[in-house]
Figure 1 (tube, rainbow, N blue to C red):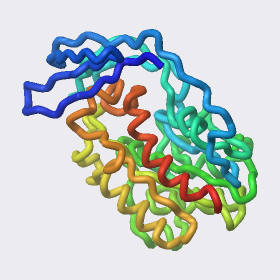
Figure 2: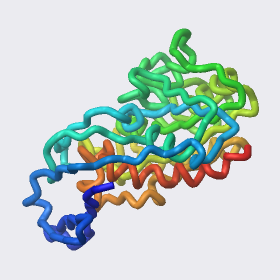
Figure 3: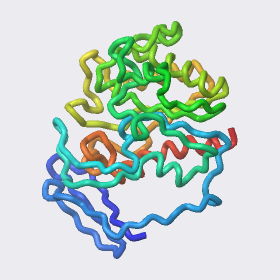
Figure 4: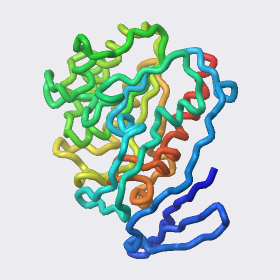
Length: 294
């Protein structure tokens, strides 16, 4: 497989450079403010034979936001708010579903949502009837969600809860099932609906968010309800700790995506490019490997 490997070196401010390594062994460094675009040519992917994949006992339902929806989509590089990309152009995303499908052989695979994901949707809502809340969508008839016993479900939304300024609430909202108007209540409503569809032996694989710098919402900033990304992560972990069938994917710390290398691994400070996907999928693979015999 011929390819270019692109790596952003984390150097002091205003001295970042991009190193481009070729299959011939040549290496050239470019200041990032002088790189207009990177084009990948003659790139082919060898098909993975089913016999080489990890055979899973359970089917999987990929429930995720726009970064999941972008699998096999044409994605455009663009600056956003305080984030400035050094690249231009369009690429076809090889996203989570594609990359996980090259490693695992599931009995069945589902990706509900418009075109395979819920772009712009948060888990919680800004009101009890917020149509951009996955917890609200979960209760709608005709939403296309599959009824598959004992399936694995992914949950990856909190970067949008942060961006949409969803009120956090408290763990009491989870325990008392108060509904989707708080993040804690929405987690409970979604989980209850998933169990209705897949039974009490369902497995939830949930994640925090990768780093971001998009629309002036960053990895460390606070939104208009006073919450950081870490606040939603802690809330989700708290809900998961109350159950025995939840598995945590730490994209934030284990993917290798940092605030410093966001220009190299995202299209706009949030949505991953193909290098970013190959990094972000690694902790998902590690967790799913542990579920092969479940």
